[in-house]
Image 1 (cartoon, rainbow, N blue to C red):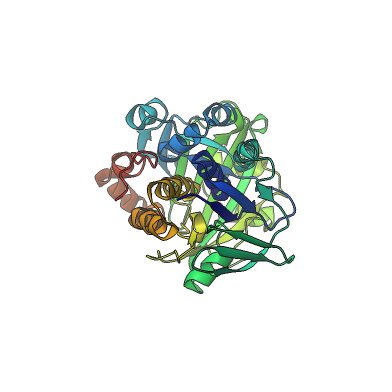
Image 2 (image 1 turned 60 degrees about the horizontal axis):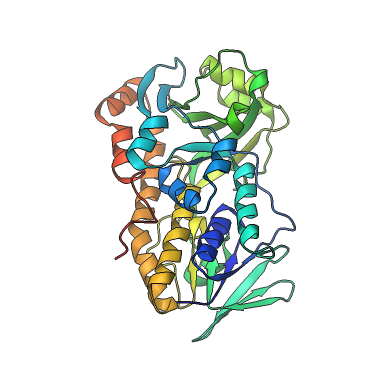
Length: 393
């Protein structure tokens, strides 16, 4: 297939897909509703299964420069810090899967992806375009925007996130169920932390009613904290909602001293919390000339660190499917067929991890991790996937 592709949404998934598609020879236009490109101040994790794609786009050196390669994934008890399990990430991950595991600031990653897309085509990103609807015919699709602009192409990709306009038109309203979890996020400059502090690994502190994830960003200059707490206090599903520092402090009373230090030394007016909602996987997310990608297609809870990774995988597989087939319809069938089961498994495993990380007692946690090898499981099916070489059937 040849032709013009319209992408709604200039987030991480939309920009990565744009570069994959342009590298494959397609004409691409990306439409973003915001007046400027921006990302929230939070961390993101990229495992080998997505790094293959980013390296293919020529971004490996830049990403490694701004990122951190954690030594291991470590699971600990929330109060004592007792280590229940660890699996190696740095050298071991790359030896097993042929690409590194990297943690970085979302804004740095977004900036690098935008620069890569614009290097391929300077005007590829169009800001201030809020999608309202799309119309399909037998030979094209039209994306209609609130400012009156109409973009015409051969394919429309909805990379427009949780509140996707494209998804709503394809599959209708999807029920979102509150998980019972609120997620705090906080960034702390390491210069404020005592030395030595937490080792440079991915640390997961787990306890009844919550868990906390800590890792380093920006070549070790920042520490990223995400604290999940079970709560009946439901707020909006937004990454930018601030709540009082005192509430964050109270939510983690009695937790490990390292958690207390992070909370105490973070900016007290920069404590963000959003409510986590779950959505069941769907089996069909394409029409004749429109499809979905990333959170628009398969939103996931953040308990497996694969949300952006899935979107990057999607873009690479979709680009391959479009090159392999003679029509948009055939390409979308091939793309969907090869992504539905994998993404559903990731969504379901992320939901399972919520239960695993919040088991009701210390003994239950010890028992669970004594019988489950988290590293072996992920290495077997999750990280070993390469979207550039996997057989498409």
